[in-house]
Structure formats: structure tokens, C-alpha cells
Length: 267
Image 1: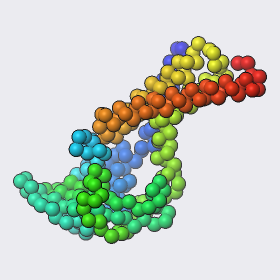
Image 2: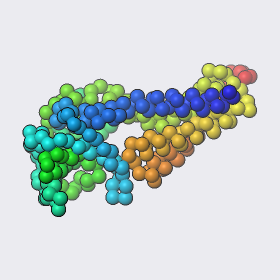
Image 3: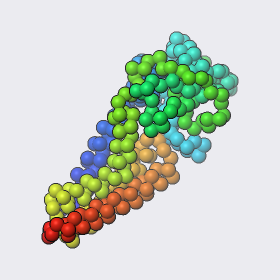
Image 4: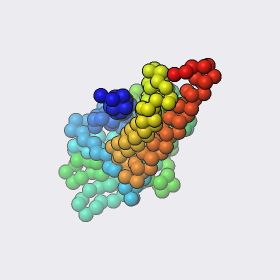
């Protein structure tokens, strides 16, 4: 197998593995619940299902909607904790609750690092005639000024909130780096620094430029589209990833060339 094929296959495998590990919490309905709803409502209820509603023309962001079996106590807890108000009943007899932005009262060690401030969430609930429910812990597509804001509300189960710099900041930044920089770093470091191959080698352009751009494009599209973003947004993100990986690869190759010339390294 040629060197460029090895790099392409190896990069795809490592990229997919790191992406899976970075989003491990979102792979099951229970994991999604613990990451999003558990600080408010505790452990996932039995019979839980989750659907990622893809972003489309009427929404900018994907939304996680949980399907819950009939449970009067859970229904009351959702309405009371989020201070939801009944907004109406549709033709199918489904009762809708919402009409509130909730401002969470984070503790100092759980406050989102990237914002530095508490941010509003917009929950809603639909109760079917048989008592089963659909629940969204935060519909990011609801405009902040559309509903009144409920004053600071403490999380009833703060033990489920992420703590530590990895959960709060480093993991999102690591996933961004994985999309927009990792392919270029993987290929250039492996080919030019570990294997110490020549910048002028026949394979260098394919391994250090073409492969990172291609994998960056495909990987970002798979990441964003697989997580529910619409096609245009996913395509834009994949093009942006291809560009950033191209720029990073050119800088790494140029920097390696400069360092080798400065220190008289011939290979």
C-alpha cells in the first residue's frame, strides 16, 4: 500500500475515533438526557427516547426532543421547575406548555466558561391525550426576546452539571480543533517530522495538502450534518474546514522548510 493511502486511511480512522470519544455523551438517549436534562430532572426515566430534529428553513439549530411515557409526577416536575405556562391545546388534543425563558443559576464551578455568564434556556412540553409527553430542555431557535424571562433558577440536581476545565472549555475547543486543524497537523507532523521526509518528495503535496483538505472537508460535513445541522450550514462548515486545514498545512510545510534551512538540515 502506498504512503498516501496509509495516511488517508489512518487519518480517517483516528479522526472518527476522536470524534466519537468527544461526543460520547450524545450517542444514546440516556447520555443526551444526562448531559442536558439531568441537572434539572435527575436520572433518565424508563422508556425514554430521543430524536434530534434537524435544523431546517424554520430553525437555525438542531433540537433534541425527548419522548416520555405517561408520568404525572414527571409532568408536574417539568412544569414546576421550569415555571412553564399552558399555551394552548391543538386539534389532536395535545396540551402545549412553554412561554418562558429560564435563566439558570449556575454555581461558580459549573458556569459556562466560554460565556462567563448564565445564559437563558427555552424549554417546552407537549402532553398527549394518553399522558405521554414530548419534552425539549432547550429550544435554541426560540428568540430570547420572544418570551418573558423567569428569574434565576437553581438546578435541583447540580451533581449532573459538568465540572472542570475539560467539560466546560477544553472539550468544545478540542472538537473544533479536530475539525479545522487536526488533519493538517496529523499528516504534516507524521510525514515531515516523524518520518523526516523531504518537503520536495513526490508524495509530500498529496500527503501534506491534498489529504488534510479532503478529510477536513468530509469529516466536518459528517460531524455537522450527523449532529442535525442542515445541508447548507454543514456544507459551509466543511468548506471552512477545508480552507483552515489548507492554510495550516501550508504554514506547517513552510515552517518546516524554514527551520531546516536555518539549521542546515538537508532532508
